[in-house]
Length: 134
Image 1: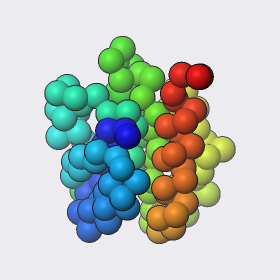
Image 2: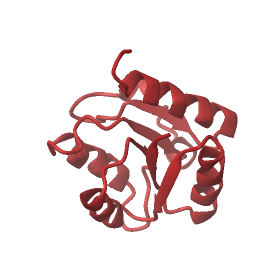
Image 3: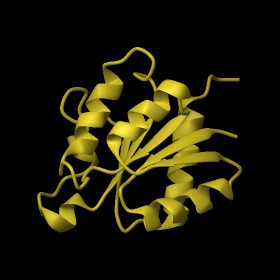
């Protein structure tokens, strides 16, 4: 199947999400901070990134990582699924309507807590959209 990278500082969530996605046959790597995620992608580009927004070092580190990925030729086309609880902490009504090539260059957006069946389905959908037509 696909090689997925989960970038999330919540290790329990990341491990659970990885278990769910491995159950679908995917190879899953977990990185707990954005610097390690960038380093990991230098070694092997994922087919899809599941990305949190808020990290202890920077409440908007996920936004910044998404922008970096979109501006590098090696990673600019990788689907990014943003998965975050930012609205629970900062009730801004942030969501898929805010996806934008410059400000929020992600492919799709889900809020935590996420139903893992929804996560599984969204990952499958994004991987299908990214694969070449038969």
